[in-house]
Length: 527
View (cartoon, helix red, strand yellow):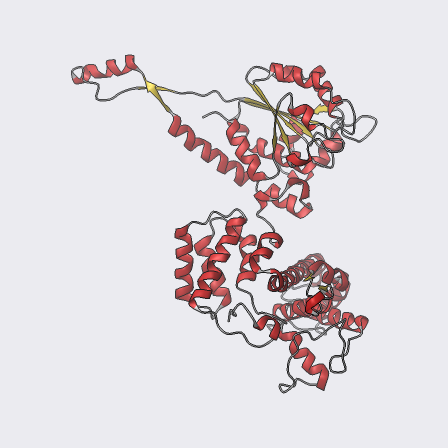
């Protein structure tokens, strides 16, 4: 059952079920948090979600999750944000996890004891007492690791959920509580808890347990199957087991993160934690802050985003297709109706498709931004009459062919450019002045009066000459030149940034995520 929001959080007792007003406040807070992460949810969807809760009730949490997702979501990409926020606003429980309270009772008496009152803080590292002595950290860690290895080997998700609560309670707290005197009152950290537990190092132990299970001597799964959890055959198991174990460990890490967010929300407020601790959707991930997994997720969104932009552009073009009335054709049509212009004719607009030149900094600091932009433009190449792509670190080279031939391996695009194109000279640092000069000297014929030029980079020039005349020469030949900078404007001009100097020559826009980039690319195209 989905618990009520409050006071039981610290008392460790069973919460009262939420009332109607509380449930409505929780739902509107949930919707507000989703909107804060860019999900477009209107009043109609909110009313639908309320109807879902009215029909389903709160007894089955998985059913509630599925029902609200059906009412509120529009795309699969929104689901991770939805799930993280749902776990905060409709948590599995409140306060100290039940598994931790039960385990404390067992430790005190040697067996589960219902008469032993549960403690809200069973493992207090800073407040040990005769009733609750501080456990040995090394023994506690080894115990948790042993039970986690068994749960992962058996793929027992219920046990993993319980262990996630225990791990956060044991290792995730930080701070001494200050005035409240409650250990962990300053917050809960999944990073700290997972760092202490190190579940990745259990791979060999779990692998051995699964292989022993496949031989009939190891642990059995929750459904009574062999310890290999339905993975038959030693040869096949040797190939898939390590990846399967890593997937299970990754899922456990997500459980720990969910538990830490839940407990942090009880301290700091659900909406505040939802705004700061829930990862944004892929199209709102900051290019400069994205990790490897997030960049891979971004690359997977390239083609759906390109299709959406193309569809949006087609609709805009249909709406803008009617131009002014063509008087000559209208009068000619009126001859068939006795001179009455019943069917006016319009001058159809035929906007020319522009040429596009990308000039991309592919150095380490902004490679993810340039990589994604090149892939997006390549996916939308039908919208342009011609696309040419140039890359640079401190020397400029055309990489249009690499981009075209390497469409099947978008993850390796940056590596191919760095290894196969001459984008670096005698050093590996960014030099925009040298790169712009090289482009103006060797590739200026790529730019003409129908060409829009996009320069992609953070304009951090390592204190070298920015070579503004070269940029002016390019801008003088092109139809338009835009500079897309993945840094926020407050950082322009700080340190070795030459952004203000370049912004004085061409239009410079802050473009920090895929959503902003898509909007800009759509604006660039004529309708």
